[in-house]
Length: 252
Ligand code: PEP
Image (tube, rainbow, N blue to C red; front, side, top):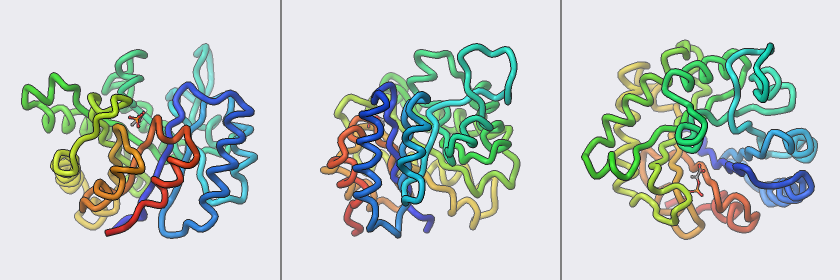
């Protein structure tokens, strides 16, 4: 079983002082954690301050997005090497909010995944269906397309660091969570797709996170599912107590 990963996506929240205080609280609360990994992804402007707080702690740093070129005339963008030199070891790619509001497509997501690998960052590739797609029975097809297209630029040696996050769009920030059965159905399909790309042992080692209104009250039942290897947490990661309860979920 891969080491579980509990990741906090702070989105567009947390000015520098708030971010620093939240990171300090998370790092302190993770001192006793050694059988799972924890990552937080603040805004770009808070990355340096949070990196200083996390230095020497058990909590890893992640970016929320990146651009695929290393440098150049790309106003407003941040590259993989820039995230890496800031102390990031992870980067979230293809979050549904980026696909919905900022024009990310399977094509750009694939370029970003390749760039993350090149920069030595572990890509957290987000996939997930909308409510309409679920109601039309298209969930597994949508997730397969997003996953296969998202991975086209990842060489075989990049799969050891890959993290996939299944995030049903209808569950993000809505308070509505996929049931463990709904989540496990998609996670096991993702595992099957990975097995068709990689050999079995390597596919079993890829962490597949669930994301979508994860809270202290539902993390235990989600983590009890065989193919759920962690969580990508939005809203609840902004509250240190809630996030730390999620990190300290009870194994069944
Ligand atoms: C997310 O943004 O990745 C997310 C899952 O958000 P929330 O936990 O708030 O639903």
